[in-house]
Amino acid sequence: MKRIFDIAAKDLIQILRDRKTFLFLLIMPIAFTLLFGFSFGGFSKGESDTRLPMAVINGDGGDLSLRLVSLLENSEVIVVTQDEGQTLADYEKSLSDGDLAGILIIPAGYSDSLLTGSPPRLTLETDTAKTAGTIVQGEALAAANRLTSAAQTAGIVGTISSAFTPAFEQAMATWDNPPIRIEISSAVVETEEKVSSQTSSLAQTSPGLMLQFAIAGLLTCATVIVTERKTRSLQRLLTTATHRPHILLGHYLAIFVLIFAQFLVLIAFGQLILKVDYLRIPGATLLVALTSSLCIAALGLLIGVLAKSEEQAIAFSLIPMFVFAGLGGAWTPLEFTSATFQAIGHVTPIAWAMDGFKNITMRLLGFESVLVPSAVLAGYALLFFLLAVWRFRKVSE
Image (cartoon, rainbow, N blue to C red; front, side, top):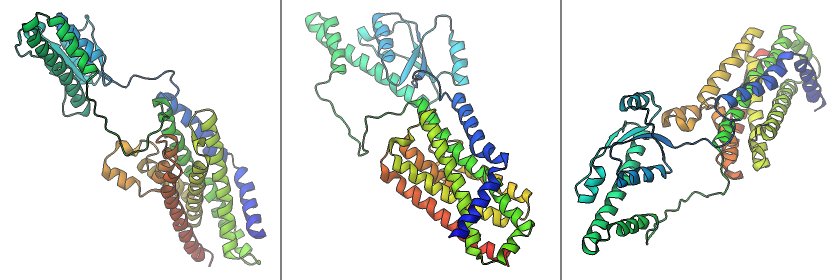
């Protein structure tokens, strides 16, 4: 065991002397996390309005058309935009540019049509091929049907008792407080905790860049192993009582200590500065960080054994960094991609590490939610380590 620790200590001293170590392991992930955090609104003050914008052109001006606009303004799904200085052509340009999700046109005579019982006509311009367009269409239709139903009910009552307005108000109030309310409960365990959009952005960016630059930092670790072979230090070491497993485990321990220390520092940075709640369940976060470090360290060991030169060590480190980060959801959440891309992404260990961290910080799940991702990461660590052992035997012969 002493020989293993001696080799690990020698590697750590050699690695920490290289300025690129701090650049890739600490400075760059912190800098890029702050940069992306500002870019995606992670540090904005207050809550952003996530409702879909819909322009309303009221050509009627009657009481019932104003009531329809009021119903839409109270929607939790859409936000109404009304600007007298904007023409229909201006709104249509905003719609084509994606700044609006829909345009509702209330024609003249709309209120009179409702009062006389004639079917009122509304015009809605939107793209129903998009999810936003479908949502806006459904919300506008629901509000219009609600108003029409109340007007028809009040018309029937008003014919008998000449009390249209009270009957209309009562019908509208009934929509707000129905005598029977159906509630659908989900099988998913609910929590009172909510993750804001700003925190959600940082909870994606922080672990993503932490994992990406952990792999990038392997280039200095792999270079140490390559240099050991080029200077024939490995051959001289093999002539001593040090066995091959001791050498391999010593290198692996050094890389693991370095990566795990990086994770701890960046998790503390995320918790204290970025307000990403890694410590909501400390044991779960620690388990994901531990297995991620084991996996990435094994990958670094494999790269060091495979590379024959410093240039190859750099290439072998940067290529998996970009491939794993891109496919594994470090840059873009896999939830926003297709099922096929998600399946491909989960071939990489980064996707499982991201799942583990986000299950705690974003999805607010329990400790059991990190067991499968951690087990997969441990499996990858074993696979990379065994490949390194197999390759090391050939290299050292």
